[in-house]
Length: 180
Image (cartoon, rainbow, N blue to C red; front, side, top):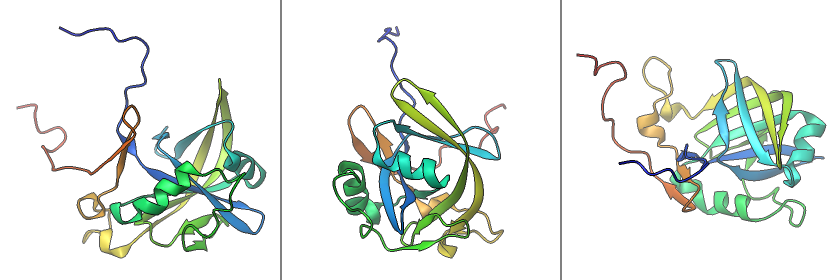
């Protein structure tokens, strides 16, 4: 028997990502688990309206979505627990600038460099709808066909109700293989 527990956001776990944007001539970073796919050509990054980085994103309309792995967790956790309005987070990660000018974390196994095409506001949140300008992947995480190999990449997941980081697990089956 299922119990109605009310209106709960229950789509966790989600990828733990670090969003990067330029704050003048320095990068700033924040941990975000509210990211999503809204088509094959657009992604969404949803941030509480009070986040410092939102102003940087709105000014430049450029951001990076950096997929995290377990080795990055100490810095990732700081990125999510310290406000850029109170502390300079530019030295938290080694970075390079991508082709569109967004900061890309050098140690991130995968980074999507994005341009903001629209901003959708809901109560207390700003959702940045972005086009993907470029995707950078550590070559160790590409298969022979040049596609991303998530078995080796092993992105960290974030689960909101308990505030825990999770590891990705084993393959349980191939999509569309259970129809037999």
